[in-house]
Figure 1 (cartoon, protein in one colour):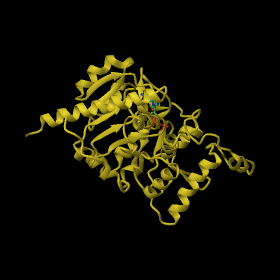
Figure 2 (tube, rainbow, N blue to C red):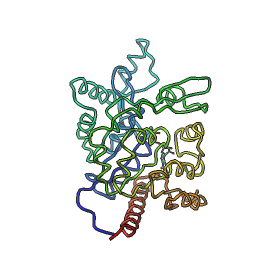
Figure 3 (cartoon, rainbow, N blue to C red):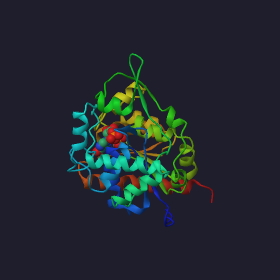
Figure 4 (tube, rainbow, N blue to C red):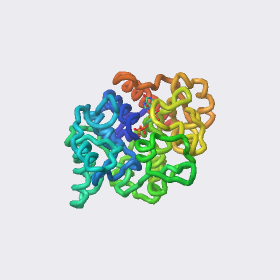
Length: 328
Ligand code: GDP
């Protein structure tokens, strides 16, 4: 294994809660300045006139140590005066934004109205929260993810998840907006120069799927020549949390670690699945991915750090194998 030239980033494709926990582990085993999180913005939406970017905010607040750990999103100790006042005025308030969380979304929309790009605003916010990891939105263009439900209904992902409580009637997912978007400034550069690319344990359909749908991103991953290691968000045949099972099933994929590996085989080289799913490691290897069965449950910061260490070790092993295979 050759020494890494200084400055080559570790790029992480990231959704919300699972990714945020993984990133918190990663920064315990590698300098945060070397990490670039490329975050899904398919969940972004205007709420109460402000631009909420749920996955970006979860990642930012978690890395800042400010997230409401009980919920996994929002700010610890936030108040809800605005939302309660809006409810009293007759507004629908199913998206419960705290006052300080609302300020983040307000800052985002005010700065964008001043002509500042979303990537630059995202950077301002993470710096204000003293986060040393670079956080990049996947795109500056609006890329809403829609969930298609039985009965020809089509709802924004946040309506599906939060308002409707993630019903099990999914017939498809529309990533058309992401498919027509441009990558945000810095995204392709970060991927092309990455020393390794990690796919966080995130929802493969509505968090990682939109990132991969943005034109140019898959090509930049391939062009990097970097090892790509993904972590399964499905453990023992079920998601650790959230509706990944309903979305995988509804889009025709098997709800299993192997099913996720199949989704990732076109661009990934390594795959971490949970020890509970060790029996699927052979199937994952048969897809052409190097598989490792480990404890993937990030029950605390140490467990998240250990998972990140294992992902980096597998990436390093794959980088060595790729270097050995290349012509002298
Ligand atoms: P969301 O947008 O906030 O739901 O977050 P993500 O896109 O990051 O997706 C959540 C996914 O992460 C779910 O499918 C979970 O099963 C997975 N996840 C959450 N915590 C863990 C964990 O500790 N270990 C593993 N392997 N997966 C996890």
